[in-house]
Amino acid sequence: MELFHYHWWTDQVECMEEFYNQLGFETKLRVGKYNGEMQAFDPPLEWEDFRDREIIFRIVEVVKGQTNITFGHGNRGIFDHIGVLVNETEYRQIIDKAKKEKLRINEGDRRTFISTPWKFRIELQRRKDVVTDKDHTIIHTMDIGLPFDVNPEFLASLLDLKIIQQDDSHVKMGNERWNINFYNEKHTRLNSVYFSKDEFHTVDPVGIKLIGTMDLGKCMILESDVIVTQKVNVHILGGI
Image (cartoon, rainbow, N blue to C red; front, side):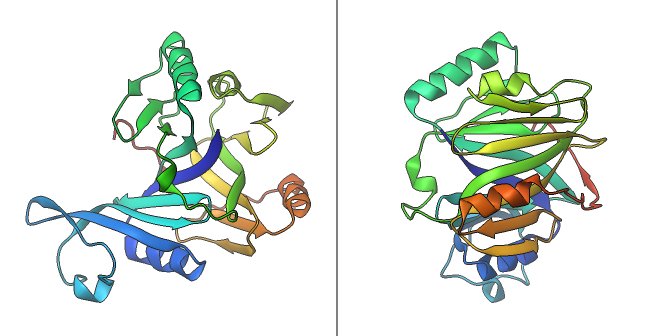
């Protein structure tokens, strides 16, 4: 099981694509609603070819190494979901646990979504072609803020992760390859993403702090530092 993906709704779709392209991500697809129909505007088309049209982009997908990021048009920044790559056995185990927890499950041929009490979703992806076979740009850690009115520790059991650290304001869970930090905050949002086998230190247009390092040890040290949360106007959109 690999943590490989996150998705946002944003009113800065073009800026998001340009930003991630500058980090070396390749745009794989663009799908949007135009003249009442869903249409593709994939590369080699560029924004100059369609910017003057009133297109509402449902999804723009960018990929680099073992990371896949998608975003679509929204009226403001909305953190929608994270994604894990799973095999068939892992998939069935997670689905069975989600049913026991009475979580909402939306199964599809291409991907499956599990809703959480905080309205962000977890995507289960069995298709390996959503990332490249290149061994770089690997998501090591995500920092997610959410209200602790429901304790996020049950997600460790759902995703077969170990509880590494836990107190009233922080729950850290993970395995030997990746971790998720949950922090007790008023609103649900993705605050930071740490990558191994890449190098950058920046903030994307929706306010996610992105830290990449070639040395996994340095990545773990950076993760342990005090994180200053970006004051970003983000909200949750449920049931998408």
